[in-house]
Amino acid sequence: MLPRLARNLQPSRVPSLQSVLRCTSTGTLSSDKQPQPEEKPKSDEWSTIYKLPVIRWLAALNKLKIYQAGLTAAAIPATYAAESASMLSDGMCVAVTSLGITGTITLTIASYFAQNFIGFIYVDNTKTRFRIAYVDFWGKRRNVELQNDEIEPPEEDVKYGFVSTVKTNGKGSFRLLRRLGQVTDGEVFAYYFGE
Image (tube, rainbow, N blue to C red; front, side, top):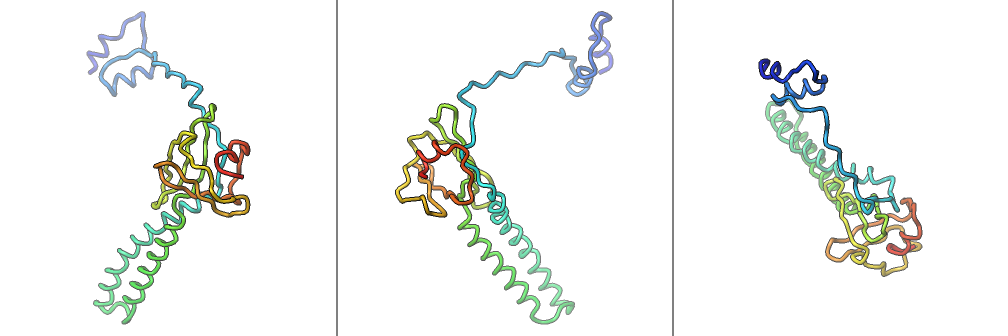
C-alpha cells in the first residue's frame, strides 16, 4: 500500500489529510472534490399543520407490552426453577405467572386502543399531498403519503368530539386527538379534517 501511495504523491500536488485517510481506507488516492448534492425541488417542502405532543407517551405505551412480555417470558421459568429448588415459597410461581400474563394482556388491550393515532400531519407547499405520521401497534412511527382526494371528508360533527377518525381511500383509518393536538394551519386543517 505504501508504494502505491508514494507513486501518487507528486511534488506539485500534496494531498490533504482527508484524502490520505480515504486512501488508507479504500486503497486509492481520490481527489478532494466531493460531488455536490442536488437541491430538492420546491414541491418537496413540507410544513406541519397538526402535531400531537403526547404521541411519545402513546408510543411508549405500545412498546411497553413488548418489554412486559419479555420480562414475563424470562421470569416464569426462573421462578419455576427456583421453586422446584425450594428457594421460593409455594405459590410464588402462580403469583408471578398470573401477574405477568395479566399485565401483558392488559397492555396489549390498551395498545390496541392506542394504535393508529396521528402524531403529525404535514402538507406540501402546493397543498395537494399530505404526509400522516402515526403510531402503529408496536409503538413505531409510520408515515403515509396521501393525495388530497384520498382523504374522505369527516362524516360526523367533530367540533365537540375528543377523538375523530380520519378515513382514507385504501390506506386505512387513523385517529385524531382534537383537544390535545396543536393545529398550526387552521384553514387547511379545517378544510380536509373538519373544525
